[in-house]
Length: 66
Image 1 (cartoon, rainbow, N blue to C red):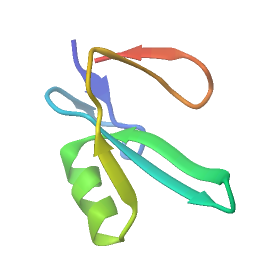
Image 2 (image 1 turned 30 degrees about the vertical axis):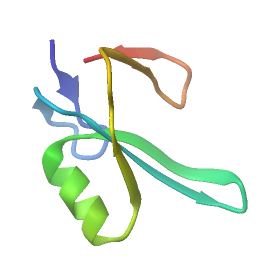
Image 3 (image 1 turned 45 degrees about the vertical axis):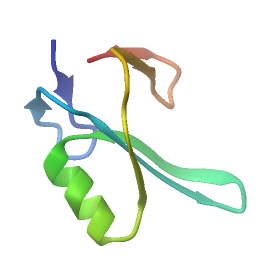
């Protein structure tokens, strides 16, 4: 099973990455993204991390499987 990038909305398989941005403890951005969007986020200096495991809870509280 694959993923759908929450930034560009393109389906993908393989590693998923989380892109997060916080300011004063408030989460401004929290997306599961493809490799291309992950690289763009890194170039912008945003916090990124690899999603480990087969499922992740996304900001709206739904469970997403990879």
